[in-house]
Length: 216
Image 1 (cartoon, rainbow, N blue to C red):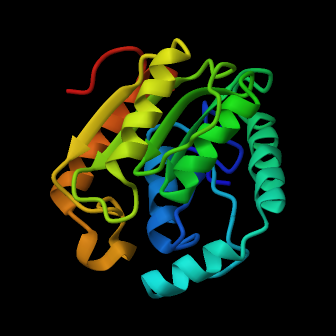
Image 2: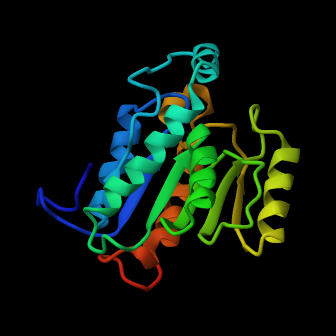
């Protein structure tokens, strides 16, 4: 857990951060601190049980070994724990996910619609029924993605619209993992910065510090 400001007991709106197949890296922790600096209480559960793959092949191998039931329980229980220490314990939180974390974010917001108010998904998709989803959705996709196929993006977008959502979709001339330094050659600092500014603007209405106005 990371709280806003220097106050160990500080409260604010909540953001659940779900990492990609690279694990709970230092970069993910930095994202948490950046959100805390904006006034959010942040929780980033370790979905990979401490594993930090160093290559794509290793990451794919470890992802295939993940127990989905364990991760599902961890994601939902982390959201419950996060809600309990926000400025409105009975209210919803936002969720931000990268890669596999984005898939879990979309799943969790649909599985427990009362828990989540906003979903930010970086290059991750889901093929579930979104009829129960009530959260606002923002997605960031890479035009040169080697992992997520264009058809998956089209299917996700169509499914969200069909369920009554009007997702905010952004595309970048980049590769899968462009927002994460851990992705090495795929990391694109310019695309990452632009995506981050859009993420902050999207989360802003739910921030006690930033208020309701646009980012200037």
